[in-house]
Amino acid sequence: MRSILLVLLVLMFGALPSVVYGCDYCSIYSATGLHGFESESLAVSLSHQYTDYTRTESGANAGTGFLPTRDAEILQSFQTTTLTALYDVNERIGVQLLLPFSHRRFETIDNFVAESGSDTGIGDIAVKFRYAPIVIRDPHEIIYLSLIGGVKLPTGDSDPLRRNENSPRSSGVLRHHTSGGTGVQGRNFALGSGSTDLLFGFSGYYQRDSFFAIAGAQYGLRTEGTADFEFGDDITWNIGPGYYLSLEEESSWGVRLALSGEYKPEDSQRGRDLEGTEIFNVYLGPELLFTANNRWTAELGCDLPIHTEEEDAFAEADFRLRLSIGYRFS
Image (cartoon, rainbow, N blue to C red; front, side, top):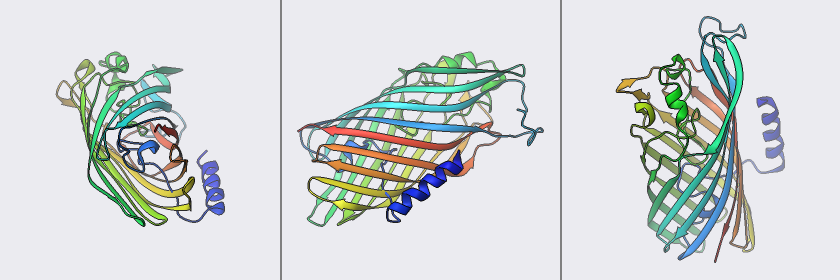
């Protein structure tokens, strides 16, 4: 599958210049907020992220094709569709509501017997606020710097945490990734965490003529949730340069190369650290951006892992695909 994606990327770069564009997925706003604030303006967006996972081989039976464990739950794919509504009070203050709807597909190993399963439902809702201390709009230069704060609420289904509380799967076998699409709904083996968490971060945008750059980061301060389970505080980040292939008053096309990553220390349960739950992943990939009539925005991106550090992981992300479309009302 990865070879097919690489061919598609080569074709993409063959038709476009060597620099590409995309969204700052770990910041507060997606496509609809990319160009800054609009006073007393409402915008909505619908974004979708699909992550495909490949089974790894670890332990004594590496290379045999058999899973070296008696009990496990192995993630096969995770996808999230997020409805976002944002309102800009003025050119410096805005508020955003994110409602994720997630579907995960997994394989359960019980006493060496494999069975496929899936979960679908609403994830953890998040409310975020942003303040822009720096707003510069010149004819040839645009600079935005936004500070972000918010809260994630326990609205998603966290029953998998309770079901696996006393199972050997709960320590080091279930992998606990942050959600790349919104940074909202917790980890990929449950739709929710059962905890109320605080979110802090920043997003920055710089443009000079047709060249631009985007950077952003978010820190999640996690608290204890369902089954006394507490996810490790996580950091997600994204940075990369871009170039507008077409920059007109009515529409624009941009491309960007995005370097993104996630880090999370070990989770804990009842005060005890769970070995094998630490994560440090780095991704690199192209993104495309389109805007029309100062109202419509669309983004398409693909992330490929270039560094994966997950001890004894039985499943690792193979690639991520992201699509977003937004509309801003006058």
